[in-house]
Amino acid sequence: PRKLATCEVDNQFYSDDGYRFVLAKHPAMRSKHLKILGGYRCQEYADKRAEVLTEDTLEFLSWEGYFKLFRHKQLTGRLYNYLLTIDQDGYFYRMGQKLPPEEASRIVDKARFLAGGGEWASFTDDQHDAYWYNLRDKVVTKTNPYFSY
Image (tube, rainbow, N blue to C red):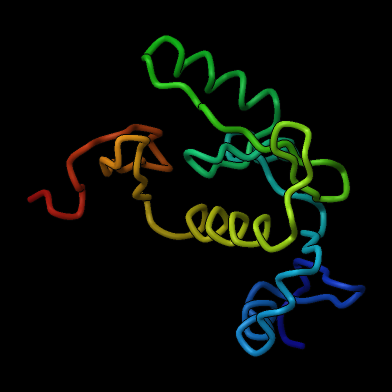
């Protein structure tokens, strides 16, 4: 083991790379609960633990961070529509119902990838129109930023 453990599955500890490596060889591992050691970090306040995940923008936020951004979005007309709550053990809930481990794992993988990856994330709205969200600046555009000159 050359990297520090960041997560736990069935009392086995993995680094992010180690988890992805094992998951590629054993996809059934997605059906088991993935626990991030120390909890998820709030993307708005790095010293706080995330208590919610916004499903539409895939941001891990504390309630304080959520309400700060929610207030901004309310003023600009762009609201977070879908929230998942996160309990102390790292389980995700949608409207009070615990998400199956497979679904939670896929959402978490995408959210963690976006948080550590590029600036822009693409999404599709209810009318199937594509839009892009800038994770750093927290702005939305309907114009593909990767095609701008």
